[in-house]
Image (cartoon, rainbow, N blue to C red):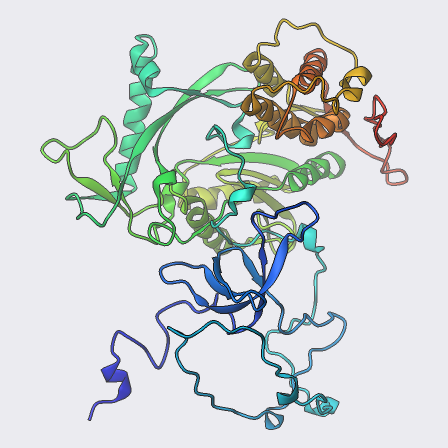
Amino acid sequence: MKSPTTTLHDRNCSIEPKTNLNGLVPFGIKVTTKITNPSSKIEPRGEILRALTFEKYSDGLRLLNLETGKIRVSQDSTPTVVNPMLSMNQPQQVLPTTSLLTVKLQIPSLENQPVIEQEENLTNTCPSVVPTVESSQVIPSAQQSKHYDYVPYYKQAPKNISSSISQDNIILGKRNDCDSHQLMLADIVPYAQALSDPLERTEWQKVMDTEYNSLIAHNTGELVPYPDKPAKVIGGMWRLTWKRNEHGEVYRHKAQWVVLGNHQEHMLHYYKTWASVGRNETFKVMLSLVINFNYIPYQFNIETAFLHGKMDTLVHVKQVKGYEVKGKENWVWRLKKSLYGTKQAPRMWKEKLTVMLSSLGLISAQSDESLFTNSDKSLLLHVHVDDGFIISKSESKILKFLSNLNSLLKLKFKKQPTQHLGYSLTWEKDKLIINQSDLISKLLRQFNMEDSNPVKTPCNGNLLNELDSDTTNEPVEVTLFQQAIGTINYIAHHTRPDILFSINQLSRYSIRPGRCHWSALKHLLCYLKGTRNKCLIYNQTSSKDPLTRWADADYANMKDDQKSI
């Protein structure tokens, strides 16, 4: 006689399930989901439904509306909290197991069953009074910590997120595939243009050879025959860029073979996506520590960072363009490493980097996962993708750490960097100057505003009063308007607080801008031209009066609210 485990071999396991069950939700639990297309502005943006089961071949939930009896599938839903989080100031109480009853229920299959019209009244099935428990009977939780580092919810580090994003939160239009901190550091060069230029072709061919040899050295993929029909082969492209220094001069040619990750299918080629992005606030706090407490700054860059992460799914990609193997032109690569462009590459690289830093004695902070510290907090490391900024009062500690990390990864490091994350850094005695003048110059060139006349204020009062006027609301190119707003907003939040008020007002009209909004935007660009060299200065502050600066960026009162910031 066979045991049930033998009979259900490869179908079910009585010891440990093969499928990850961490994302399961209880049957019938209340779930809040978003209403994607509300009929009016005053209608609620969400509704409460009941969870039934998971949709087949998807991570979406089948949800039941008890009022209408309809069933819908949603990937953007939040289950209600069964047990609210207990206060941190009180010990967690757990009822003794003797007060609990074990009840076995046999529930028939839900397939081909009629939809429930209304919710059953379950009030009388549960006792209304829970018996009290003496303090001696309380069983402390094994996972409860004795000490809590309070972190506000809005400053908590981001967790691994799903790539299922509501379509309502996506702005349609062209988008440049460039990291925000590389806006002024790199110029993308089309592949055809690079090879057609006789003066640059040799240099581009050299860096492409280096990139291809690096892919082979890291054992990025295995050459296999073209897979059968159900499998999908993803293409790739050369991403060629000019790297510029703090003076805007080209000092390096860079080539990357990038997978077209937008062709990947969720739950087939990837499961989760997550990018390790360093917080701007953390980096600025570290700059302040350098100036006020004489910390020593170092910068390093990790070469071919993503190629250190291992793929967690089966992905086939085409061979590198221009380097196809003779006689096997139709063969493809089965990826072993997280090649640039794949959706899971940033997450796989972050997991690999975290393990390496942990082996060197560094752990991530609770408020920012991109900040790593050693046990005595004497060494601070800020990581943004493959760029690192490290500070300490002991230069020997920094050099020892960089030497140990260089034995695991290939690094390039520099003391007192002049550029980092899009900032131009000027180090002086007891003072640090940061600005983004090169990014402003690039923005002016992009919109043909280099020859414009500078103005003294970022906004014109007359233009702001006309922003809500219907007579001047002639449509303009939405994509260009949004590109300018996005770049200026990036500058304002990093180094130019004097234009925050103006850019916040213009951002209100990003969806449907008119001619008056475009005129106000050009006025702001003219102001940036005349003030492109304005900067933020970090000075040593007195402990008696640490806060000595403020800014009133409201240059013209708004007619609709008459408020000033």
